Amino acid sequence: MTDNGDIGGRPGGVDGRLRAVVGLAQGMAAAHTPQESVGAAAEAARRALDGSFAAISVWERERGRLRVLVNVGALMAGEEPWPEDESYPVHDFPEIADFLHERWAAGGEPHAWVETAEGPGTGSAPYSPREVPSGGSWGRVAALRRRGRGSCVVAPIVLHGRAWGELYVARAVGSPVFDRDDADFATVLASVTAAGLAQTERLEEARRLAFTDPLTGLGNRRAVDIRLDEALEAHHADGTVVSLVVCDLNGLKRVNDTLGHAVGDRLLERFGSLLSICGAMLPGALVARLGGDEFCLLGVGPPADEVVRVADELCRRAAELEMGEGVACGVASTGDPIGPVSSARRLFRLADAAQYRAKAARSLKPVVAGRDGGPEDPVIRLADTSPARPPERRRFRGRR
Image 1 (cartoon, rainbow, N blue to C red):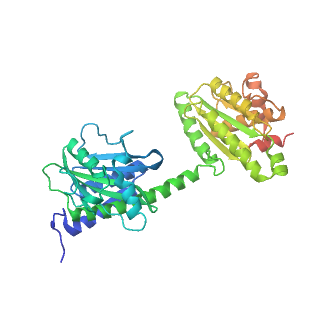
Image 2: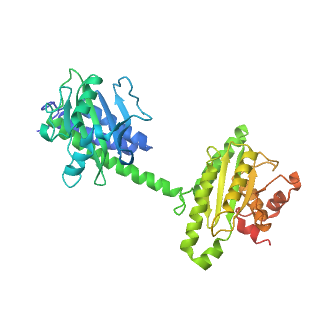
Image 3: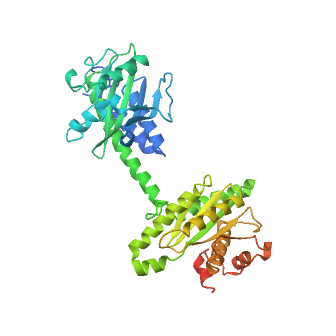
């Protein structure tokens, strides 16, 4: 027999709840960002449980707090849809940490429970009042009373065998109080949410790896190409200054040959960290490892002089790195007299040519395209006379 009605206080009956589960999973799968995914899950759970309000929070272990990621439904004073810093000390809600960790995540099944504004023991919690951790349920009771809500169901979200956070759905005063069936259904919704979060994590990790250098954690060439194309579109549209710093880490081959590649990798990592620190001096800058011993910094917006100042600081600090032999830096910026920059390849060729001259001269400072004679600048002439091949320092090195 097909059940399409309300049974046991369950909105929508069996079929309705099945559709709600499918809808929650589809909503999370269709999301484009982790934020959209969490928001879709909260709204789907609120509707499925006929709640007036829902929230999803994450347990930040390193900070000992439950941080609210999203609030949906009827919001009260102080509640925002996407709160920047709405959080609660875990010791105010210890059941999510202690009780869940010890009894459920250790091998049992996580299960939702119900709280009401009347106080602990009046809901349908999966444990007796004596088992409620001190201050746990009373913290939620106080929150219900303070915000004019009559009852809530709390469902732990367990990801990779650990308590990740919680799904919280509430009903207004005067609405039917959540019952055991509601708690069972909330448990199912939390499990589906956890599966969606795991999928989102995998996708985000795949996206991250697609644009990240695995050794240094900086961006990779693909990330630079995409960002540089976007930056040059802005430059052509409104004159936004776009600057590229190409860096060649000196002495890496010697370190690899004499001390081993593991030590060479550590040198690359240390320089990557140094580049990240210097890049932070330019708002919105992208720092990346292009491959081997070659790195770059892409600045969009700051004046050319500011980028050169940061490149100069990078050279100074790199000279102090243990084991290394400093860095050769070349800078090319649309804020300097380098002529029209119609493509990313053109800017790369200019920065590469500047870096080649810095390398050849063993310069302790960056070489900047366009600052030594305008069109007759040796860097511009080098870039213009080199074969029309992809912009790589190795081409210039071959001209020695």
